Structures are given as structure tokens and as C-alpha cells.
Amino acid sequence: MIEASSILVVAAHPDDEVLGCGGMIARSVKEGHDVSIVILGEGMTSRYSNREDTDRLKLKELNAHCYAAGEILGVRNIHTFNLPDNQFDTVPLLEIVKILERIIETNRPDCVYTHHSCDLNIDHALTNRATMIATRPLKESPVKAVFSYEVSSSTEWAFQTTGSSFKPNFFVDISETLDLKIEAMAQYTSESRDFPHPRSEKSLRARAEMWGSVSGLKAAEAFELIRYIQ
Image 1 (cartoon, rainbow, N blue to C red):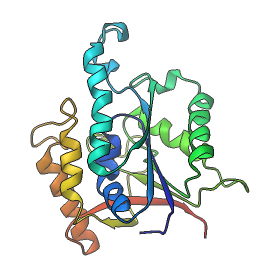
Image 2 (image 1 turned 135 degrees about the vertical axis):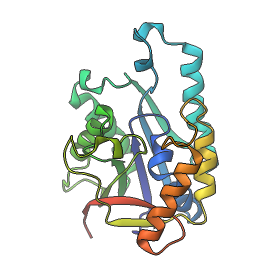
Image 3 (image 1 turned 180 degrees about the vertical axis):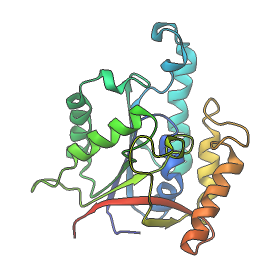
């Protein structure tokens, strides 16, 4: 792992943070790193014909799942926002950037993890874009490293139609924290699926073992290193 005193994970929706880097988060916390999570979108309203028809109780429960998952991973510093699900393209990009700039100014992370730029989900792609703007290497920026992560059922389902495919070049050993990732994902009862869906427990374990075999480990999470300043 790259040495980092403070880590910020930027996610578009509730569960993306666990799917993308739950094992890395849990390991980083165990190693004494300060980890914060930003979840930009509410993650549910696109499932309804009209956003106004959303079951507010279910939406509240989904938000609560963020904190339950965070507790399992060891993270208490979680920032949630209410950007419209699968409609980030209706929000001025500058508004998303400013949310992240405020968090970065307060938390002063030296390492940031965010979505892959070519994910099928528009919210994921725009989260990446906003993160890249908010972490641009200005003199006063604390951010030294930026990584992108994959999200099962989004990154791989783009089938390279939205741009470059996910090509990891950085792997984190999560052999000791994979079970925590699975337990955290289980908190998201409305987002988990049965096998063979990519968000099933069996598929998530298989993916971690696959990246582990690629990198000579028992289980791993894969990332693309976008930028590293030493």
C-alpha cells in the first residue's frame, strides 16, 4: 500500500464504496490510517417512474445502511449528500466539484479513491470527472495519489462502449479483510443480489480471488493508479 496518513473514498451511491474498495478501507483502518467516505447520491430514486414517488422509508433505510457498513469497516467519518440517482448529468458539474473541494479542504487527504472514468453508470463517470477536477495538482492541494476502482455490475458491463476498459495496475491484499467487505455489503439489503449477479457474495469473493491470483495473493482489490506525486 502507498503510505497515506489520510484517505478519502469518493462514491456516487451507497454500496459503491464497499464494492469498489471495502477491503482496502478495512485494511487501512486496521493499519491506523484516517479514512473518510463521501457518498454523493441518494442512490434510489431512479427506480421509480417519478422521483417524487420514492418510498421515503426505503430511502432513509438505504442511507442508514451507509453508516452500518461503515461501522463494520471501521469508518465513522462518512459524508452523505442527496444528488439525484442516475441524474448527476442534470446537476452542474461545478456543484459536485465544490462539494468535494470542501471535503478535501477540511479532511486534507493525501490519497483519494474514486470511480473509473468509463463506467456504464453516468453518475460514476461524472464522479470521476468531478474528483479529477477537485484533486488537480495545485500547489496548495494535499492530494498526492489518486486511484480509480471498479464497481461490480457497472464497470465491467460497459463492455468498452464508453471508453477505455478498467486496466488495474495496483493491487491491495485484502486476504485478511475480505470477510469484512462481504459483511459490510450484506448491510445493503436493497442492493445485494443472488448469484450469478456480480453483487452477490459468491461473485464478490470470486472477483477478489481472481484479482488475487493475478497479483500472487489469496484475495485482492484492483485499482488504476491515475496520479502519484512523491
